[in-house]
Image (tube, rainbow, N blue to C red):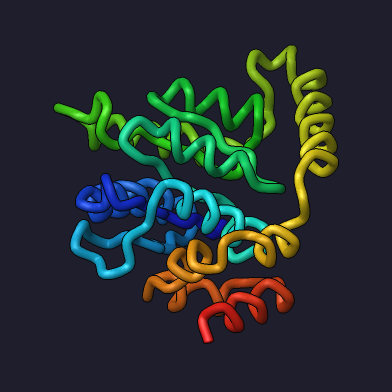
Length: 212
């Protein structure tokens, strides 16, 4: 699995801690982590949580990432921004039980974590346990187990509803504020990892056009 990490500007200083913890947990499982930044609070390319949501959508819809870890101060803004977009199902994750139940019940493809609120003593341990519960079990297994059939049915219903209520990603990319999009995709980590991992020639070609 290709797992992307995206930090917005208010919590960018914690990027290395988050990335190191994520890699510690998931690389032994055989997953690969791609750190899309921000790499530090001083990065020239500053990302808002709205742009983190936009990047999440580009990565998921293009197949450049299978799962995205993002967040903000409370996690709420990043979660809302992610869920604005098609094919992105993002959960707000505070603790390991949230992570486990989101994985097993909702089988989403992104999480938004509060990297300021409640992020105190032992925060790196909480992150480690969150990542363990997110990725140690095949998603969609149900919780409790006897609820697996209706939960899987509801997930399919939600996916179908999102197909109806959301525009497709290419329409969004063409209609969204051009400066907002260009700022979001101009970071060096994005340019380094996106084009080598994207499975969508159409999305890749349009992003290249935006960057030109």
